[in-house]
Amino acid sequence: MLPGAGLRVGVLALQGGVREHVELLTSLGARAVLVRRPVQLEDLDALVLPGGESSTIDRLTRILGLRDPLRATLAGGLPTLGTCAGLILLADRVLDPAPGQQSLGGLDVTVRRNAFGRQVDSAEETLATTLGPVRAAFIRAPEVVAVGEGVEVNARRGDDVGDPHAPIVGVRAGSLLGISFHPELTGETTVHRELLRLASVRRGRVG
Image (tube, rainbow, N blue to C red; front, side, top):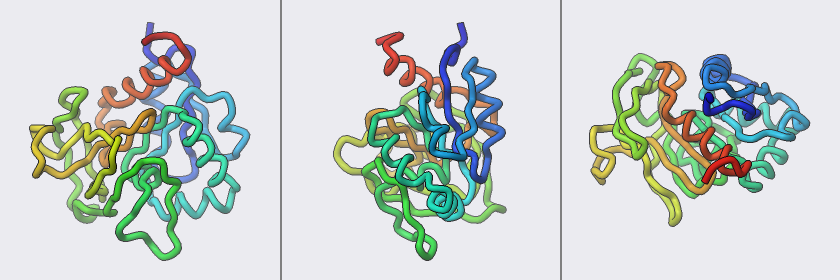
C-alpha cells in the first residue's frame, strides 16, 4: 500500500511551487487538497507550506483570513512540512524580513532569507539527513542560523549531518518539519514520506 493511501494532505495554494508538491503527494497515494480558504484546513491529516516568495505568501494569508486559522492548525499538532519559503513561514524568528513581513511561527528557530545567493546561484545536490541521503534543489534558499531547545537538526548542506560547521538546512520539532530545499523538484520522496508517516502515526495507524 502506498504510504499516503487514505490521507488528506493540504497544500497551501496561494503562490509558489504548489503543483510539484501536489504531484509528488499524489504519486505517494495521498489526496492533495488545495488550501486557499480557512474551511479547507478542516479534516486534514497533514499540511505542506510550499516554496515561493515568503513575504507574498505571508501577505496573502492575512488578506484571505488564513493567518490565524493556520497558526491554530500548527499549534494543534497537525503534521506540517515547510519547504524553502514554507520554512521561513514556520520559523519563530526571521533575521531579514521584508518590510511588514510576519511568520506563522511554531519552530523555535532563526532563519536568514536567501542565505545561499540569488536565483542564478541555484544548485542541485545530495544532502546528508537523518533520514538518509536526499537529492534536493536549492533556489534562493534560507538557512537556519539558530535553533532552540527541542529542535532537532536533521539536515545540513554537506555530506555529514553531524558536522557542526555545515549550514543547517533541515529541522524538526514535534510534528513540524522545515527544510531549506526543494525535494519536490527532483522527485525525491524521502521527506514527504516522513510527513505521511507522521500523519499515519497521528491517525493511529502505526507506531
